[in-house]
Image (cartoon, rainbow, N blue to C red; front, side, top):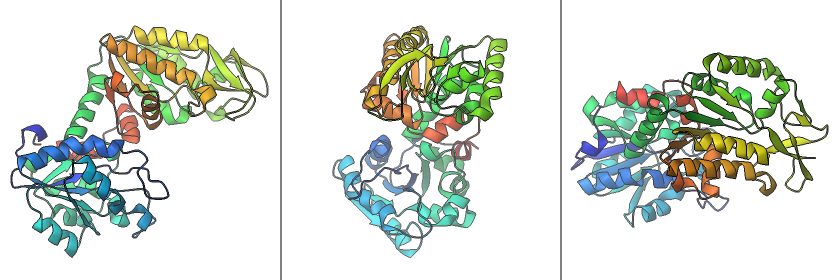
Length: 398
């Protein structure tokens, strides 16, 4: 595998797998361009070397076959602006004669965006013939789509085999994602605290089990905390609970004890009489929530309890919010965690925020530049910390 920053792209056509799966409104305006911005340095390096860039991505979940609402042509104008006015050519297919012809005629310093890969069902099937057709468009393959690294798709995992090892590489974004994740997973300085939130224990079992081998402390917040509370005999009212995971929660607590890992559950909660932004609210110990009420955020004591643990740590991983932070009344806990992570980072801790909702939270509360690294890959980051091999990473390394 060649190292991107050391590679000279002069005279080469770089075929780049980017993750431009961005949200669009009903007028096809981009409502969040973070994923596009994240890969701009990779494209600029290729262009400044005197190479050209051919970009391929998926967008949304088309049902098979072209659909205008999932066309990447809606991104062309904004991409050109992000590149400082560099014109962006568009091919209304990602394989076939027109795409091949446009790619062949591409001159140094030019950018070509291909149509949505998922207009072909072969993309998600990891079809080899489809991957080979894509590979013919470029001289070098660059994977800069960490958000899709956990998928064994044609453009993320299969295509690499059609390029010699020195002609396939990670882009700058992918490289930085892998370095940040490795730093937490394999080079963590202790104390190492993992903050795991979100609704369901079932979604996070594997990541918690893998972190029990590495972390010193695991903080559990969000809806999943109430499954743990109930498992330990607490009263949780109408709070979210996975009844079929109560034993799992007890097993995780026992396993943590045997390994000397401390699991922190929220001592108190902000409770509401319904799941509604305008609900009546109160506070209660998390294991004594009255009937008819539900926990929708961690309480003031829990904020302090969790913040103290975070501020003493040297490595921090955050995946998942502490409450329903999209509603103003229930955002305080998530915000307090973000503040504590920012403070620990300022004092020398390494902090990695990964997973859609926690990333949305640090952006919403203005802390994105106060943590060490914000990951662009939700599912990919989760699977990486579950200890799984990601096909998109393995394809480049092998």
